[in-house]
Length: 347
Image 1: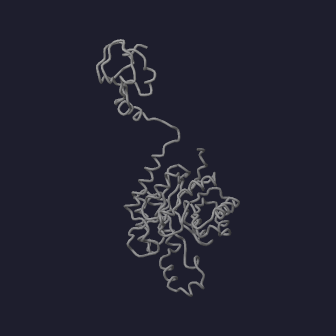
Image 2: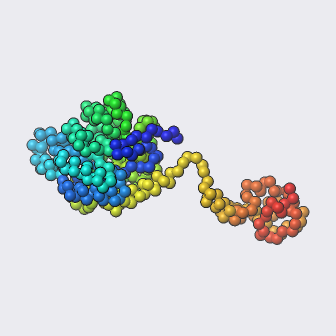
């Protein structure tokens, strides 16, 4: 398989298909608007082995219209309470870098993009699935010259193609596409992970990752087996708390297991070249069959199929060499159930 171009994130990591996976802990609103909880989440994400934490740069004004909130005042109070302001986001970006984990966020307005770029120095800009067809916004982000991670939930293949064209035509080549199904939680039966392979074949110079909304860790691990370069997973300190998507987020113990198992899956992929390790090659002597005598053989007696057995261990004449010894004579008397050697045969 031809190796695609690696893309370099602003934190120095290089990501690419079938390369060591980059694991992102999506904090979403599981901090409940509390910066102290957010810091604890960032620290735990670091401890679980994640490469990056990702927040949401949104406010009620950047998500919904005023008319919507006039009809749904409770929703506005909810979004205002659970969002983090610019000052808090900057503090969290500084804290992340201080403890050695990368920082990113998903912006929903041009102002939020500008603040992230100018004040937070994110590893990348994450484009939410909802903005896949927001070409004006994609164009604006592309011109910021920061790597873009593009989620594709709810999008047709044509919409994904058009989004990529907008981004690349505006000067941004460092793109990673994430397969995503925008359901919370996601039923594993409709996860359609083979889309990772489809997207790789469609976008041959763009690495493909996976944004997961399922319960558990099976799907992220499976995505690594399909070559996903990045896994994004919702993260929480306590999934029992009531909040936006918090119930389907992953707690620290399982996140640590996820990162560990994803790296195990990656390390197990190896290469497409057929290589036998020294250890496996040595197993032949233990596990393959050799030629044994079924009955006693006298000197100068011919070897025939009815006079031999194929049994372990494989330290003698191998099974595939049987045709070469049939009809040959033995050079000495040999007992029943004896391992036959080439030195016992008159060639």
